[in-house]
Amino acid sequence: MLRALLLAPPGAGKGTQGELLAAERGVPHMATGDMLRRHVAEGTDIGTRARAYMEKGELVPDEIVNQLVGEAIAELDPAGGFVLDGFPRTLEQAQLAYDWGQANNRTFNAVVSLVVPEAELVRRMLERGARDGRTDDTEETVHRRQMVYDESTKPLLDFYRERGILVEVDGVGTVEEVADRIRAAIDSVSTAE
Ligand code: ADP
Image (cartoon, rainbow, N blue to C red):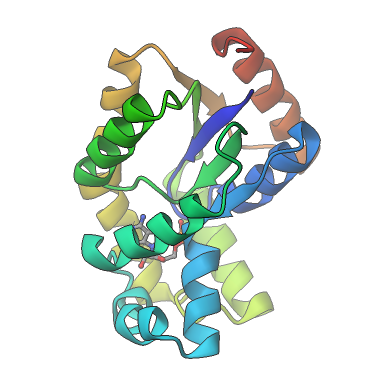
């Protein structure tokens, strides 16, 4: 049963690949960014509290994210797999996810790091901002989000490398090429239990 995390800088294609992978394996795809954007659009309490952070390209505080993820986890099939994208994103969140996984016998069995050069990331995000109107895909915010990734999220690579479940995948290529690499990488690391 696949319990995967996609870990990559903004613009690397986590969302696209996460959705494909989840559909292929028949497990739910949980993307905290999408969930937060839905809350913002619906004007919920979580959305109201999260909005300003997202628009600035800052991380939403753990207290809000933990509430969001807690609600989503409660709806998951307790014996099933999942593809997570966007959570955990800080070492504190990673520790929380690990403790929860240990307690429930459901730690990740594969963590996929998508590797894309920064200039390509920035190019993709500005293109997406112009196309889809994502309010955090502006020139200034894009750079801030890369910095936040380097500072807060990159350290998670070592956290998972030490646990032997990290695979690094070249994220430059067509959607299908990258998806093929992800499949191969996951098969190399995850046991099918
Ligand atoms: P990207 O990876 O391109 O930044 P996401 O959709 O994953 O896009 O996230 C968008 C925004 O949502 C982030 O910039 C951040 O403000 C917020 N966010 C998403 N997941 C988390 C998280 N786990 N912790 C804190 N903030 C988060």
